[in-house]
Amino acid sequence: MRNPGHASTLIRRKTRRSTWRSVWIVRVAIVVVVSASATACSGGTGSPKVGVPPTSRSLETVARGDVIGIVTLDGEVVANPQITLTAPAAGRLTLLRRSGGFVDRGTPILRVGADTVRSPAAGTLVTLQPGRHLNGRRVPAGLPLVTIEVDGFAIEAATPPDLAYRIFSRDIASTGAIRGGPAGFDCSPTSAAALPALPDPAANLGNSGSAGVGPTFTCLLPTSVYAVAGLRAFVAIRSSVAHGVPTLPVSAVTGQAQDGVVWLYAGGHLRLRRVVLGITDGSVVQIREGLVVGDRVSTYPPDVSLPSR
Image (tube, rainbow, N blue to C red; front, side):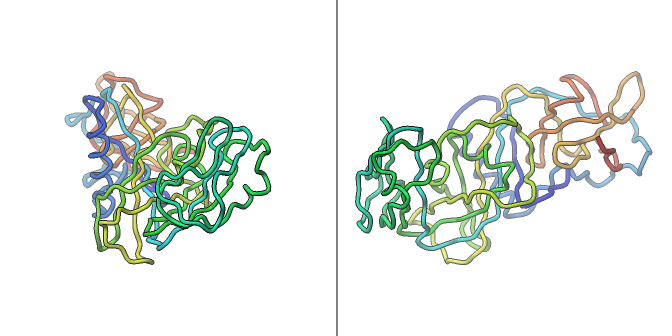
């Protein structure tokens, strides 16, 4: 499956749910990205010619498994990043600090209704705009209120619009890597933590980003990581989990974005079957529609252009 943009999603089958394993998968994901060793659903060496089915001697079986979706974004190292705190829910705004002062990590900054928003890192409270003018008034969930300039470094990356809801609508973990430098370190996803839970109208676990620029994702680097502003970097964000879904190795699928095609083996013959794809890491891919658990397909992906819908 060809990767259409800078963003890709990564998955791994899980045999049990555990926090440490989720973190380990994220770390593996970012190492894969940095080494450029993952090629999602592109079809490997030995793919059949156009329109010529391969032999049925090498088959893969659609298996059920739990998968973790990872969104990988291209970014850049920045010094003293500015992060915006937003209203975690709709309610009456009460500012708890004045602008221009130093705040430590965990310092209460504002309150909306019964929810208190704290500083995710040490830094300077740069501005209370537009929060100052809204103090004492009711504000909607997600409204930007105050800005903090953080002491240290961060990776900033633009989020493709069609991935924004998936990234910013749930608790996430993220891992960073600096090109030519440190890799596999945990970083704090301040932007996601500051934004409220948003509905996902598409409820889509698709694996690619579309053209355009969405919200900026900011991931604070640990002080132990040596960083240089301006260097290219990557961030892998654990954003989606799907339990008990049909999966196939990506080497058996030809696809782009959510559309795919495989050689389905049935009745002693191979025939083309169109499938709808979910999240993938270049190793396995979620099959959303078109196949069921137990179906068998050729190991070799069709070397054909996908028909239009």
